Length: 273
Image (cartoon, rainbow, N blue to C red; front, side):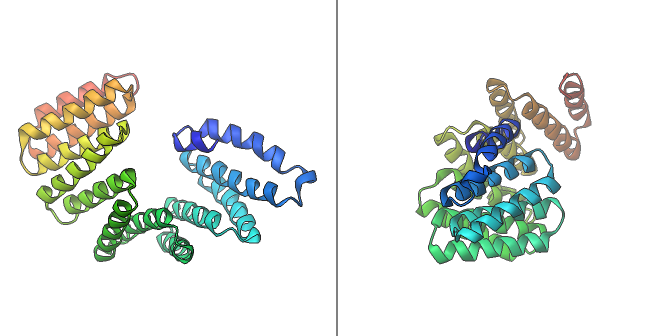
C-alpha cells in the first residue's frame, strides 16, 4: 500500500490499506504495541491516498486518528510524517496559518531527534507555505536550507525538487529568467541522473517556459518538444496535454497567437482532453 501510494496509485493503495486495517483493528490485537503501530502507519498511507484523490475531509479524520495513535505510543518519527500530511490537508482547505503551525511542529520534533531527511522535506514544504503567504524572504531561506541539507545527505531527488522550486521563485517573483534557467538545469541534471521520468518531463517544460521568458526562442521550442517527446515515450498522455496547453499560453502571451491557436487545436483534438 505504501509503495503504491508513493507511485501515485492511490486507489490501489487505499484498497490494500483497507485490507490491512481490517487485520490491525481486530480486537485480539488491541493491546499489542506492534499492531497499534502498524495501524497508525497504515492509517497514514490511507490518508495520503485520500489526499491524492482530493477527498480532503475524509483524509483529515483518518490522519488525525493516525496522529493520535502515534502520540499515544510516543512515536516521534511517525508523528512528524502525519503532522506534515495534515499540513498538506490544511493547504488544500486554504488554511495556510494552520498548515504553517502543523509543519513547524513537525520540524521541531524532527530536529529534536535529528532526522535529517525529514528536516529537509519539512524545510522544503515550509518554503512552499511561505511562498503562498507571500513571505519571499523566509521562503527563500527555507528553500536554500533544504537544498543544502539535501545535498549534504546525498538525496538527489529532494535536491532536484529544491532546485526546481528555487528556479520557480526566481522566474515568478523575481522576474529573473536567467537565474531560473540556471537552477532548472541543475534540477534537470539530477532528475536525469536518477532516471525520474516525470521529473525530467516537467523540468524540460519549465525550462521551455523560462527560456521563452528570456526571449531564447529556439532553446525554448527545443525544451518544449523534448518534454513532449519524453511524455510520449513514457505514455504520459495527460502530461503531453499539459505541456501543449502551457506552450499555447506561453506563446499567446509572447504575441504569437497563430501558433498558440494551433497548439490549442491539437489539445482539443485529443480524446483525453
